[in-house]
Image 1 (cartoon, rainbow, N blue to C red):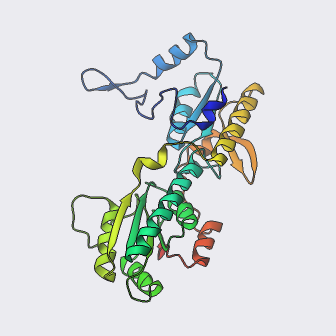
Image 2 (image 1 turned 30 degrees about the vertical axis):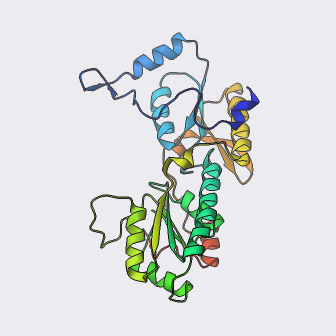
Image 3 (image 1 turned 90 degrees about the vertical axis):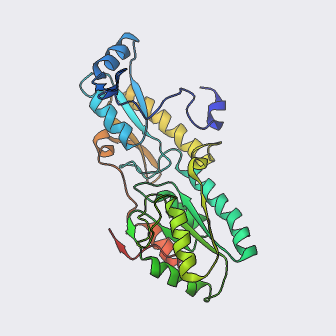
Length: 293
């Protein structure tokens, strides 16, 4: 392994999350099961074992594919959404948080200068880990996540309260997977833009929306992600060398260990509503939501 890989984002192997071998598209627009072809090719190549790197969907797919094949394998959680069950952290999560935090730092300058409300939409279709951790680190006033319902009028009331009911700098972090405001009648546009419009209408504070999108997924990895990936990689090899298979490498309370891969198949993992970061956000006076879904 070359040290240069520590500084590289993405995948130098050119892998993809698309192309289900159990329903692979053919030339005439139909799908067929090619899982047997995949297993045959792996054996033809003399593959001794596989380390599957990805999210809960990848783990479910490869568990189905490899369990009956006899090919040893272990999983390494890698997703910026941090939604793989069984592990506290996945590779890529802390890099995404750094991007969100830096974006909020930059947006806060504009918000303060022009007394605006800045809405930042981040990734998180099912879980709000990026929004929650990034929002706390970046000093957000409001964090909206898929795990918690929100009342847009209550959000507006919170903003009026913290700004003393006059235009002032406000930072709102929105996960892409939240529901749109109930009075949103637009057919297109991001959910962040819908939130910005709804809050501007209710508060009278000029609002702007920024959608980070794939900016969160690229670039040089954060230092903790490099440490996490290195520790996960070593543990994956150790598990395979000891004859173990169908295991997921996980981080739990500072310890890297292996757990049954079936845990990852229970995903996606959601933000625990009684967890420490929820308590922290509430303690800081950040609006999170009204009730749990």
